Image (cartoon, rainbow, N blue to C red; front, side, top):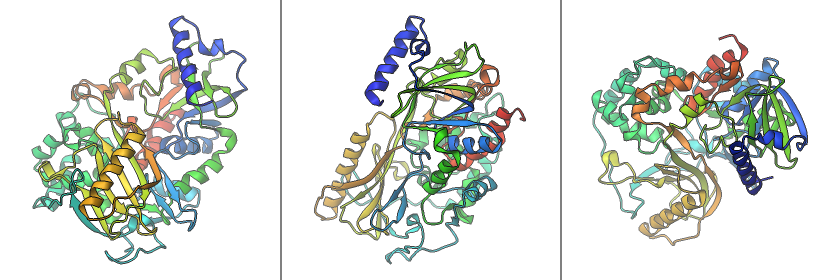
Amino acid sequence: MHSSALTVLAYCASLASARGWSTIEINDGQWSEVIERDVCVIGGGASGTHAAVSLLDSNKSVVIVERNDHLGGHTRTYLDTATGIPIDIGVVIFHPVPVVFDFFSKFDVPLINMSAVVANEPGQPANFSLPANLYSIFQVNSDFRDGSPVTPDVPSGQAEAIERLAEAMAQYPYLLEGYDLPDPVPEDLYMPFGAFIEKYNATAAFPLVYQISQGMGDLLNVATIYAIKYFNLKDLQYISSGYYTEARGNNSLLYARASQYIGAENMLLESSIVSTNRKNTTHGQLELLVSTRDEGLKLLQCGQVLLTIPPTLNNLRGWDLTPEELSVFTQYITANGYWTGLVKNVGMNQTISNVNSAATTPFNIPVLPALYQLTPVGVLDDVWWAKFAANNPTLTKEEAKSYAERQIATLQKANDIPVTQPEWLEFESHTPFHLQVTFEAIKDGFFRNLTALQGGLDGKMFYSGAAFHTHHSTLLWQFNQDVVIPQMMGTA
């Protein structure tokens, strides 16, 4: 049961709601199985997988509902069939903190300090024994709209600006723990990030922040709270001391082994929620009706539910949302579009990373939608990382891919290289990336209301994922460990 069937079910759910019927009641007895679990986890990305493992370790029974055919969310790894070489195209870096070391070591997945090794000198062949993302290359800046070369404006005093930025960010250490903000919300947190760095004389630090914050769209105009949670105080520390990644460049290995630990009987992959009954069940459990790939409908009866997917109204069609949930989730006004991929048959110089820059924009920010960069992986011949972004999520995957191909052709022409038809090995959507509300909503207590949703429905409804913290696996695992799981277990 896939897209067309899900559309019909969603329509039926809306019609039933309008007439006062329950979709679950209409389909009474039509499901192939009733699954009872202590906790039903919706979404099998970084948050959902980590939470499921943690709950199993606390002797809770779980089931994960995941729309993809694998766990891992934004973590995606391409495995070359000829050589077995892995290349991460999604999540790459982790902070060197106990929650990361514990999770990786639990599944015997080795890590490497990315600052402790030198893969190669720029211009020399890659070191095949190290992760592909450590391949060292030269950088050339150009405007991908016409291929013209750009000499970036290099701000003076960057080191001092980074120190001032760190001091400004250090005023808000609680941002590392979620969205539990003081009342009133400090003005710094809802002003545009561009105004924030100007206020603290830290504009020279912006090129570094932008480089690390790919996927954040129009970063100068994003509310500061989003910017300094994604590129946070810990990032400033670990840029120099070293991020960690899987020792061969295969972060997906963590999720493959976590999947084995969780067990196939506890995962509904390529599945979606089509209707919920969380308020009026006679047995006191929350009911979720799930459309599965091969086995039709299944009914989940859950002691608790942990929602980790982006809480957009589109994702929550068929849910019997509470007034409190509706009040919060309807305030999301936009998100970014973000896609990452691997493309071959480009034919350009494989010792050079091509970085998109504009000559006349502030800080040479590229004009989006566009490729951020086109970078050779080094470990496979004529294979390139491609990262594409937009300031809103309206582009389809195919539209984004077509746009990227046109910009590759522009670069080929500008470098007197024959225009080819690129071959995509991977092109993954991370859209919607970074859900956002207005500055005014932040000022008026949006995040207070968001945080207050935890433990709703008499302690049965909980939330994790990027919308409740940020797009950062390390911080999401820490959030699960320190906030969400203790609340669910009644120990917070």
